[in-house]
Amino acid sequence: MSLEELRKQIKEELGIDDINSGVFAGEWIKEPKGKKIRINSPIDGKYIATALGGSREDYERVVHQMEEAYKLWVNYTPPQRGELIRLIGNELRANKKKLGKIVSLETGKTVVEGEGEIQEMIDIADFAVGLSRQLYGYTMASERYQHRMYEQYHPLGVIGVITSFNFPSSVWSWNSFIAAVVGDVVIWKPSSKAPLTAISVMKIITETIKKHGYPQIFSLIVGGGGEIGDLLTNDARVKLISFTGSVESGRRVSEAVSRRFGKVILELGGNNAAIVTAKADLNIALKGVTFGALATSGQRCTTTRRLIVEDKIYDQFVSRLIATYEKVKIGNPLEEGVLVGPLIDEEAVKNFERALEDAKKQGGKILFGGERLKIDGYETGFYVKPAIVEMPSITPITCQETFAPILYVFKFHTLEEAIRIHNSVPQGLSSAIFTTDLREEEMFLSAMGSDCGLANVNTATAGAEIGGAFGGEKDTGGGRESGSDAWKNYCRRQTVTINWGNDIPLAQGVRFEVK
Image (cartoon, rainbow, N blue to C red; front, side, top):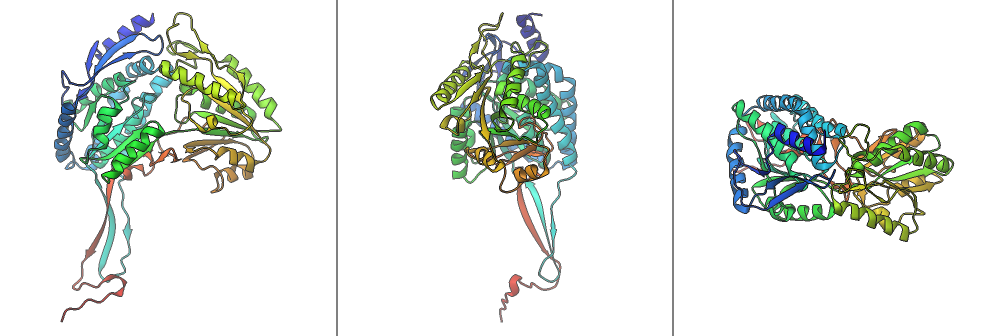
């Protein structure tokens, strides 16, 4: 099947037209008044469809509908809310392959990664269903006689989720399914580079909600960050903003939301490193580094961007890594055997090329790759040959996140030196060490070791599971999404004190007696 035939098939399967409304506010707004967003596939650079973005007027309609939905949703019990998420998860299962194809077509992910994106939504739905019966608080001993104290969590209300192109649906579900079971309703603003995935997902989810008679608790509004994004971040009616994107954009989001004393979850830049020591299992390290550096064509926030190798094994390991890179198949991600697809667009290719020029000016030596590729049959796609660049030291370019498959390689002599190199960048998302030595592992995991939100031992920086809270430190922004107790971010916390006695004793022994 040709790519053009596949494009047509995917659109028919998912109900994608040439012109699609990008605004859902309890129902699809047929003619939203925002900008038209033309979507081309990075696989061949050719047109897929157009999404109609929302205007300020459309935005107001979305917020009003969410406020009304919240009034209903807040009265459902958490297990009732969990039941809806269970039903949604089942529909996602039934449509996994279809949705995976639109992810691949729109973002350039391989078939396995496209379906993995939808599987991640299914997994977080399962997690949220279980969570709906485990929203625990704490009971505390009161210092006052015949008093009881405990904590409880209430929903915030309307929240906003702004997602990036590289995970066009799963990150939304991390936030939205968890927020839904605690009682929130959600406005989704997807990336303008990947709105068709969001539209396709919302069509399936909203039909499921309608079929089973629940209030429409999820809404969608496509539009630019400077338009719809600004409306969301400056709107006091939207109690929390979860934002995935660049450090620069995240800083603006944080400042805007903080001014109105709203809550933020920020998942920003990642400049992740893997340390490989002489005591590593080199086969495991090779697989972990390769996957971490090349998955999603280096366009993950958890991509391995820096490799720090002990001097004793440096030449051996880097030689093996180059040999592995030479075997990696690059091309149409919908074809079997392809591991590295295209970058998202022409701008991403230019950023790749500029970063490599800067690296060379700063003393870097390109050991492998680094050039733009023309793939037979897909000459207008956005392909590059992943680069391995040997660096003499930390330089300005290695402190930046370039969203492309560039791996900077450093040499170290002691583990303390490796950790210093590792922690020397502004970002702090994911990290990894490859070693079979307990002392090296524990040093890396100690307070004096990795300064990241995610720390991995003998596995890649990329590929986080949904069960753990996801997020980072420093310029990565802060806050946590997905598993563990991240659900508390979507709630307001309340400490309750109950006096069941016949007097009002005061805390700290304070006496207040009126005679």
